[in-house]
Image 1 (cartoon, rainbow, N blue to C red):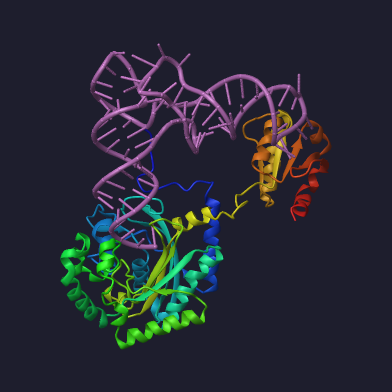
Image 2 (cartoon, rainbow, N blue to C red):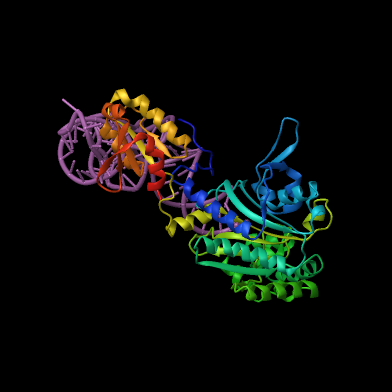
Length: 420
RNA sequence: GUGGCUGUAGUUCAGUUGGUUAGAAUGCCAGGUUGUGGCCCUGGAGGUCGUGGGUUCAAGUCCCACCAGCCACCCCA
């Protein structure tokens, strides 16, 4: 058999790239308005960077990373998410020294070896942003507001915002103990998966989708009721700011993130149009990450969002037409003697900034016309021996019926006027 | 990673209880109009029926394995 894309990867073909470009331009515009600057980090990093930041015990690090050793036996990993790399770059390049708050965004492929499904690929694309340097709720609110704004700019409704606070190094361990104690009392009745999590990551038990688990844990204490003074007031301020910004949300005390570095604020944006892979974007605060990676203690908040999932719902709500690139003019040769001249003229128009196309298959005039129509060119210029002699050509507007004779010398000027 | 469903021209699909040259629509190419598109008409090209085994006189149709996609779980963007 011939070569195929490997499992979980796909080609983004010319039929879809205009959509991608459109989405990218929208989100770059939003980032620009919020004054976030782009950062581009390598697609692979030392494996330990991810293990350290995401957490050794998480599913991502435990069983989903593309890890390999290079020829000098160093363990490398294709990045499974963006924050670790951005924080590494922030520390390595001392970005925090030049200014107290650094606002960055990225757009990059990510890699996770999961079983593929619609909206879940092994190479997928994420965009995201990080505000590094502010411990205050205003930064959390801005990140959330910006996430919402991107989807609003893309006219996507049916998105729901859930927020929670997962506490800090002071209150979370305390809460975990309380929760664990409660969970142990009902452990025998819980699903196998949940039972395993009681010791390793008890908060995830509350996030189980197993109906029986949900019923059994309905009355369990929630982190939101056990936050310390500082976390509680921070969370309260974030909520108040969201209200001020007219952003509606629901507090979900069971919301947890799959990455260990989160503290305090955690949030998730979901869509009801996506099936079970319904998370469009997620994020939160990570005040301990910088020092965990060996930098100076520096607070941060951020979010990440998947582009493929976004594409899926944009396609469902299709409103994007005519985004494909098309030539302004197609130059057709009426006979073989004028072909070389037509190519020359095409190149000339191109160098003057006009999108011009011509025939490269030595086809009949009829076939060239058909091609021009298929390419959805605005104009066709027909040139043959007669026209060459007189230095004119028949200019035809494909959207209307007639054609007119124009002077070849005037063509660039005519085109720039007409396309207005 | 676990369980289930699916896999036929470029694309969307049909293919009768296994039976001899695998079809349609659309797209593509050409002609009808030897200097002109979109409509219409005519003709043509295009498939080792996901891959590899097996059962059978005979397999697109049945069985097995593998591969890929999809759905749920898991996880998450």
